[in-house]
Amino acid sequence: MDFKGYRRANGQPGVRNHFLLVSTVVCANAVAEKIAMRIPGARIVVHPHGCTMLGADIDQFRRTLLGFSSHPNVGGVLVVGLGCELLQAAELAAAVSTTGRPAASLVIQECGGETKAVRLGAEIAGDLMRQVRSSHRERIPVSELVLATECGASDYSSGISSNPVIGWVADRIVELGGTVVLSETTEMIGAEHMLAGRSVSPDVATRILDLVGSAEKAAIRMGVDIRGSQPTPGNIRGGLTTIEEKSLGCIQKGGRSKIQGVVDYACTPKGSGLWVMDTPGQDVESVTGMVAGGAQIVLFSTGLGTPVGCPIAPVLKITGNQDTAIRMAEHIDFNVAPILRGAMSVEDGGTQLLRVVLDCANGRLTKAEKLGHGEFGIHRIGPTL
Image (cartoon, rainbow, N blue to C red; front, side, top):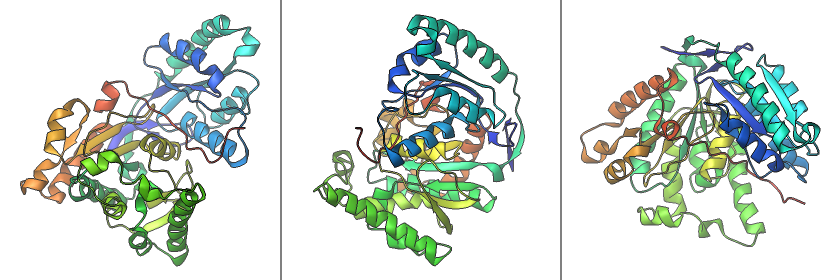
């Protein structure tokens, strides 16, 4: 089984061929956005970070931006910086260049201000875009596919229809030699022992238990109980009653495969199979982390419906709620609500969803892509000083 993707100079396979504009600091966001407006089809990463960050936070910030800039779905990059931030634009562009992608940097302070920076940036971006468009699709085995799994605005249907269908696809991708990432550490609370029991080794099991324990302790250090925010008001309105019920539904996205290991936020799995990534439950930050870690496609279940996407990776929305499938139709890519009526089995739904995934890998746009969604958010570890 294979798909037609873009083989990068360093061997990585992508399912999209984006030209990306990346801001290294919040102060450069406006210039990056104005350059992007002059380059039809360009994708952009902007954020409120990049200055006065400390230790692990700046490391995670750098790792995330590099993960996006050198992602398999990206064919070329222009990095836009102010000039006095922690991560210099030239540093990031140089790191991207080592992967064989065309990359350049632009520094606003060196250009003499916004107007000149936008004019020069548009010229550089135009040249880079032409280089990106010269790439062509070729056949790539499914074993090189990396899928991210996410759930957002979950309801009663998520854990018994859409998430199990995603889990079926996850198992099939793993069987074919591919890689699947399960995230949302806080949404494993109460079900962590089940994941630990599926680990390939005692060390992996211990790591999973430690991750979840640390998430709970972090909330306690803030003087709050994480159960005060989980389930969310939307989850409760959708029929979920406890954090354990939500977690039992969440982990269904990982199917039944053995868990090969645990990776930190925005890090790349060290092999094929099913992996756990330590991310928050917040959808955008979680998706950002998995995509920075190399996931080319995101399978996103939603009971109540959510429009969010990603700047560089297609996000497929799956729902098991028939009302949502109708009311939020412009955001839903695949409807498995017939499972709740007994008109579809999980295996049938999974078989159909796998075809949708391969169509997406071959270039078919998701609803989020058609609507222009490109939400991006980096998980913060500590305060800005």
